[in-house]
Length: 209
Length: 117
Image (cartoon, rainbow over all chains, first blue to last red; front, side, top):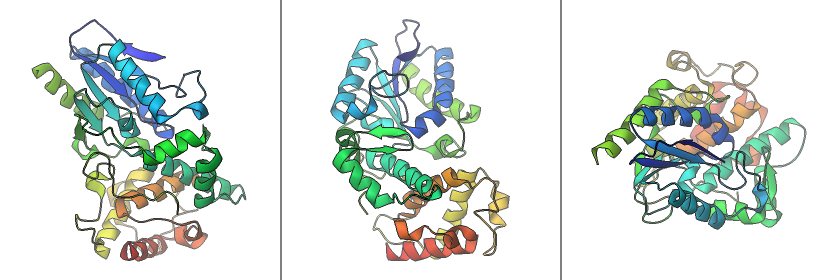
């Protein structure tokens, strides 16, 4: 499934969203940015990677290679001229497209936050799943972390995953938008000033080209 | 620890921690005053508190069980952000009630780990 603002316009941005728990917390904000880009004359596309969000594929069967292939196919399908990745979405963004990486995260750090959440939750429930044992299990036979079921392939892939070498995208840090990252919040939320700031960075660059 | 938050290889610079990182390019540990400042900023961001509120924390200020914002999921986010911004690793045995009981306890832990890293 893909969320689109498609007016058949020249400027076309594909977005690879934040992953896992951060995806939930950032989705409304991501759509806020898309609304603003639409008003600036930019089409945008927010696809689900296989196994994520509303995809019918099982997450545990996915791999990084499969995700990168799907990302390239989606970019080609929608005729994307630019790419925006958010947080861990940076690890799948096609290298050949110009664009932006917002507050990028390695796959290892994305997994680390889930391992931490699972460990804290297990400890609260009286369990003994520690940080190290969860990681060992994940590498060997896959593991469920904070509700997400990882197969060993994806777990190991993500532990090594960084942005594709020679990626052309520019870095946008949270500090450039002001305030704190929405992925830190307890509940999904939105920040109009941050959405304005990110959309402005993108629109000013794309429209001036 | 299996997954170590290493220097980010994500295309060159440390882009994940980015400007948050307390370590300089030579990898030197941050001064304790910086750990204090960074820890207050982390608590502000993770728990959505005002800067004035976190500036008012002293060593005896109660955290877990005293701040309603600090539930178990916020604890996981707090630990992840501490690892990222302070460039430390939190082990299983670190996580006990005392560490999160007061701001002073958490700061002592963070400073000790920052000096070890």
